[in-house]
Length: 338
Image 1 (cartoon, rainbow, N blue to C red):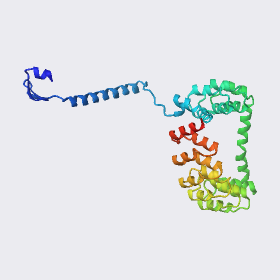
Image 2 (cartoon, one colour):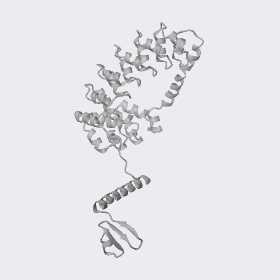
Image 3 (cartoon, rainbow, N blue to C red):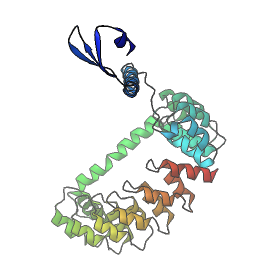
Image 4 (tube, helix red, strand yellow):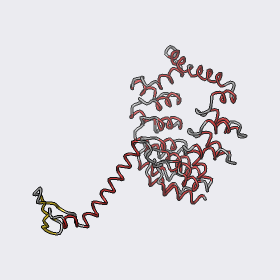
């Protein structure tokens, strides 16, 4: 502003306005408040520009979205056995996995050996673990070097061939079943998704419960047939209805009240089970039912928070492993375990 005042080229109109006698234009000068605002905006633009530079150069610091990979959370979680197990199972940080591979707990070492992110070098160390289960997980791990896999299981290829051969047996049975009138034939027809609805309706009242079970498991079985099979006297038939991917919510609601504990866990894990039914099952006396509720894709954060304090340790473990569990709930669980 002082330059404008001292320069004879400019005629002052008011404190923040001048007239340029050379260009015959009006010049506006910012007030102190406006200058401060302009400075802040300029600084923000510089910050945005720097962020864009980082992004273009692929050098921008990454925000760690997985708290299992956080240094701070690692130190916090490892204060408890539950937290240590969860880190071993959920983290993708190879340094954490290498450290936990030396745990005195075989449970933790098993979890490291089964973690899909465990690198080959760590797996090589675990291949000589004193615990047989740890070595078996190493054998099955996709990151295990082939030479190491062969040394652990010389008969691996032979077993795989036998497994492939046995996998062909069902198709041979189905081919021969079309010409043989016996229970195997009926079961094959009952499980075939191409079987007409009318035939499935007939087989649904067959005297053999195994045939009815195959009908109940068939994904193309009509809902009205599943409704009948959901109250079948045979427990295994009702289980088959509960695992059928096409079973509608109304039938699952009926099965959620089944008196047999072996039926309700399958209802609790079914993706078609509605939230209100999951809320009821979350209070089930059977811990397996509650565990499956935790793993259901339809579960709410409210149910997770409630089951976070479940009396059963396995239920709480399932809650801790669920990616939908709110971080404050997870922290509270780990603090309680410490």
